[in-house]
Length: 99
Image (cartoon, rainbow, N blue to C red; front, top):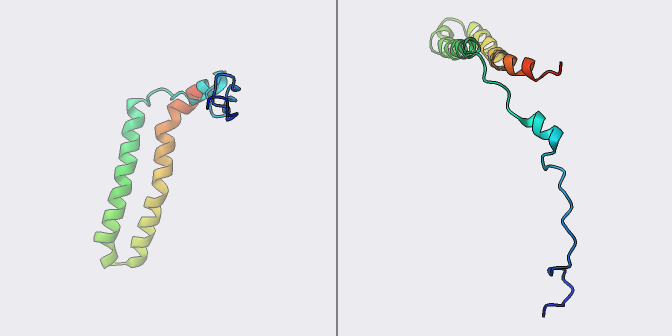
């Protein structure tokens, strides 16, 4: 039963290399960047705290007086997280740039 031609024996061809295997360029590009500075982390957490506070205040307090103002505060809060992520990643982005 060993010579049935299924290709499972010792004479099979080697598997082709996969495209997602890390090569020298890919390994360098996929390495995590440096740890953000303490000040960057602090700015990130402050911005995210402001975001959460705006959501809570807008729908727990402000909507009793003006729904439009609550919606505007929520819209402002929605814009904050992308900027907070940019602030948190500035150090790693600048260190990854090629000289």
